[in-house]
Length: 212
Image (cartoon, rainbow, N blue to C red; front, side, top):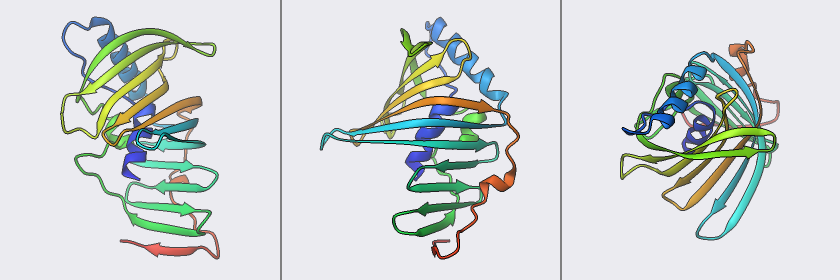
């Protein structure tokens, strides 16, 4: 769950420190940072494609992410719902008819929505690759490599909508050989999401497993 949240957060809100001499990359990332500093909450629909290098298996899902400052998020898939209010995490699976409850935890490897919205992490070298059209959207493509050799992320590619300065697409490769691609279909920001949206209401008849 920690890895999944980290990757989703990276799509929505990113602020990195570029290397010296990369004036254009720095300008793009500063514009992205300024854009997201103005966001208190957001809702986006996305697709997720995951490829596993060792087995050559590919998985594809679509979902909706609700996000609010204060480490609050809600991710809805057809078969799973993950919700946290910043203190408790609920993970409901349709196939098992079971909800797991745990404490919300952050550690050194975690990249939470709150961390990103606060303007972190600054742990990557950045390079501007060029421009690319995604459908009708003109984007600026960036590649980021972690400064830390022990980082879980091997590389991160971002496609930034140059008209709105929102992240349109992200592609993350990790040390396990897994490559995950996220494509943002649409996004609404500052829509006034209520805190109650980030507390999961357990349906009647669902098995509860409390791990706290």
